[in-house]
Image 1 (tube, one colour):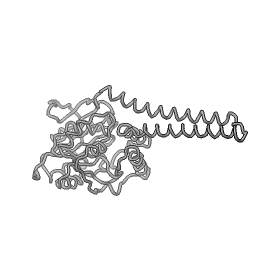
Image 2: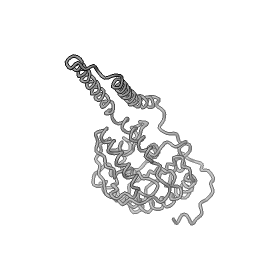
Image 3: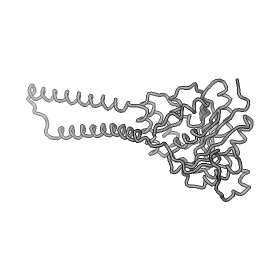
Image 4: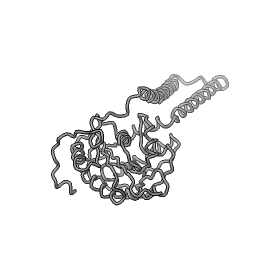
Length: 330
C-alpha cells in the first residue's frame, strides 16, 4: 500500500559548491513538497574550501528540516554519503550531488518508479552534460572495473538514486574503507530499476575527479571487490615460465643438433630484466592487497565528524553571520 505522506531523506555530499547551496535547498524543497510534507535534507560538508559550512548553518537556522554534518577532514565523496546515510531517518532516501547537475525536480520520477515495487531506483543520465574527457575517462573506468570484477556497469548511472529504508539499513552494515556508493548498492542485490533523467551542466565549482583520481578509484574498487588481478598474475607467471622452458629447450636443440652455441649476454640480460620487471609488478599487486588488508584490520572509523547541526542531539547552534535576504530567492 502506497504511503500518502512518506518520510523522505535527501543526502547530498558538499564540496566546492557553496554558491549554489541555497538554490539546491529551494529546488529540493519545491520538488519534495508535492510528494510529502515530511522530509529532511542532510548536507554533508566534506571540508569544502569555500563557505559551504556557513551556508549550511544558515539553512538549518531557517528550516528545521535541513541538517548539516561537517567532517573533520576531507574523507571523500563516498564516505561523506555514508555519513549522511548513517543519520538518515527516511522511509525513502535520495542520494544526489550538490552541484545541481542532478536536478531535484527529477526526484519525483525516481519516487514514482520505486512505488512500482522496486527497492532502489537509479537515475540514468542518457545525455551527460560533462566534458568529453570526463565522459571518456568514466567509460574507461567502468570498462576496466567490469573486466576485473566480472560485472556489467552502466556509465550513465552514478550516485543519484532513491533507496528504501531496508536498503539503507543494509548499506550501513558495509563498513569497508574502500567505498563506492552505487557499486555497494548494486552488490547487495535488491530489486532495482533505472529511469531516464535530464542532466545539467555544473552551476558552481568544478569536478574534483581528474584522471589520476579516477585511476586510484578504479584501483581501490578493483582491489576491494575482486581478486582477479592476483589470478591473472599467477597465470601470467606460469605463461612466462612455460615460455622460458620452451626457449631453453630450443637453445639445447640448437646446441646439440645444429651446432649453434647460444647468443651472448644480450638475450640473457633482456630475459633477466624482463622477468625481474614481472616479479616487481607481481609484488606490487600483492602489496596492494596486503595494504588494503592492513587498512581494514586497523578497524578505524570510516569518518570523524567535527560538528553537526539540525539533529535532535544538537541543542546549541553557533551564532553566525546572516546571509543576505536576496540570496534566498535564488
